[in-house]
Image (cartoon, rainbow, N blue to C red; front, side, top):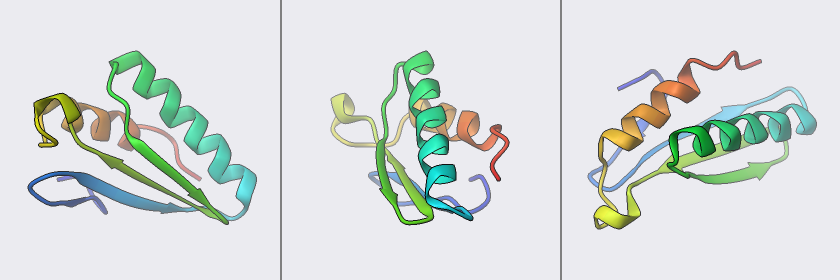
Amino acid sequence: MAKGWQQTDRLIEKKFNFSNYLAGVEFAIRVANIAEQVNHHPEIKIGFCWVAISTTTHDKGNTITNLDHKLVSEIDAMDVD
């Protein structure tokens, strides 16, 4: 599993910290664009200076599939400030 991600039998999640609120919002938008490209959409929660991402495959009974691992890899490949 990629650094910082936590995995259970039902989902993969990670919290990202940012120096300011807008940096987190911009990151969330970038994640949303990646999700559209791979057609797999995570839960995205935005707080003050943080963004939490969690992913599961809903149509496979809320389990982890290759789609979740692909999304995590794509997010990890992003340049995160």
